[in-house]
Amino acid sequence: MADVQQALDFVRANGERYLSELKDFVSIPSISTLDENKPDVQRAAEWVAEQLRSLGMDKVQIMPTALHPVVYGEWMGAGKSAPTVMIYGHYDVQPVDPLELWTADPFKPEAHDDYLFGRGVSDMKGQVVASLKAVEAIVRTTGLPVNIKWLVEGEEEIGSEHLEDFIKKNKDMLKCDFCLNPDAGMIAPDKPTITTGLRGLAYFELRVYGPDKDLHSGLFGGALHNPAQALIELVAGMHDRDGKIKLPGFYDNVRKLSKQERKDFKRLPTSDKELKKLMGVPALWGEKKFIPAERIGARPTLEVNGLLSGFTGQGSKTVIPAWAMAKISCRLVPDQTPEETEKQLRKYLKKNAPKTIRWELKNLHNAGAALVETDSPGIQALAKALETVWGKHPYFKREGGSIGSVILLKKYVGAESILSGFGLPDDNVHSPNERLHLPTWYKGIEAFTHFFYNL
Image (cartoon, rainbow, N blue to C red; front, side, top):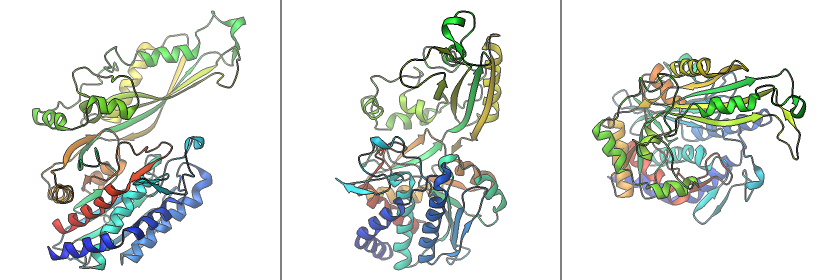
C-alpha cells in the first residue's frame, strides 16, 4: 500500500527525533504517589497535551480529577462511517527507590547498547510516545483513515484512583468502538504479543494487635502471644504446601480453562529455565496441576506484598511489638470479584485468628478481571500489523497484572481494550535501572502505523 509506505518512510526518517522527544518526556519526574512531585506530574500532562496539539488534535484538554489530571484530545475527521479508536496511556511513573541501585540518574535518560535507561521508559512513556509517533507519521503524510480519541491519565501507578469517576462523568465524550491500550508488552524481542486477558486485584492491609504498647521481651515474653508471630501464622495458613489458597470458597467461581486455552498456554515459548532466570529464583513454585504460564495468567493468587512489625533498625532491641502489619494482594480471574474475595478473607480470619490477639482488615484497592475476544476487528488488525513487521503470527497470552482502565471503559463506555505494547519482561519495570529495548520500540511504532491502516 502506497499510503502506509509513505508513513513508514516518515517513521524511519525521524527516528532520532523520536528518541530525543522520548528522553524529554522521561526527564520529567512524574511520580504520582509523592506529594513533592505533584508539579512534575502536571508538567508531564502538559507535555502530552502539547504533543496532541502538534498533531492537530481537537478539543485537547488537561481535565482535572480529585488528584492528577487526565489529558484528552480527539480527531473525528474520518467521518461517521470510519471506526473510532481510543488510545489509552498514562504519564505517571513509579518511585525510584532504592536510588543507590541505579547506575545513572533515573530522570536523565541515557542510551547504551540498544537500550534507553530511565524511570518510565518502558512503563509506559515509551509506549505513549510510540502511539503518538505512529499517529504523527500518518497525519504528516496521508492523513488519518480512522477517528481517534486520547485518554492519558496520571494515576495508573497508584491504582487509577479517580479514573472511574472521570470515565463515568465523561462517558459520552469517550464513546468509541474500542480502545488501543499499549500498557501490556511482549514475551521477547522476536515474539510479538497480544494480551487477551488481565487478572483483577483485591488489595488489603491486615493488622494484628497484641499488647497496648511494645513490651520488654525478657519481662513479659512467654506470657502473651506475640502479634508478629500471630500474623505470620495467619499468613502462612493461607496456602497449603502445594500453593493452593485456603480461603473458604476461594476457587468456587474460578472459570475453568478450555482445551484450546490450555493449548494456547502451552504454545507460549518461555521455558521454566528462562522463567527462573528472569525471576532470579532457584526453583518455581505454585499449583502443581498447572504450568507456570497458566499460574501467572489464568489462576488466582494470594501474595504478601509487605510485612512490618517491631524493631527493624540496626543492632538489637528486645521488644515484643504491640502490633504487626501485612500488605496482601489477591490477583483474580474471570468470575471472581474483589467483593467476594474480601468476604472470603474475613471468613478465614474469623475462623483462624486466635483469641489472644485482635485483628483489623482494610480493603485498599479493587479491580476486576478482563478477557477479550481474539476474533474482533481490532485484534485482527493488530495481529496483521505485528505479523507484517515481525514476520510471524503473534502470540496470544493472558497477563498476570491488572490495568484499571480496561474494566472501567468496558463498564461505562462499552468499549473493549486491545492490549499490546513493546516492553519486555527484563525491562526492570518498577525496579532500578528500568530500560527500553530501542530496536523493538522502533518496530513497535511501525506496527502501530500498519494497525491504523489495517482498520
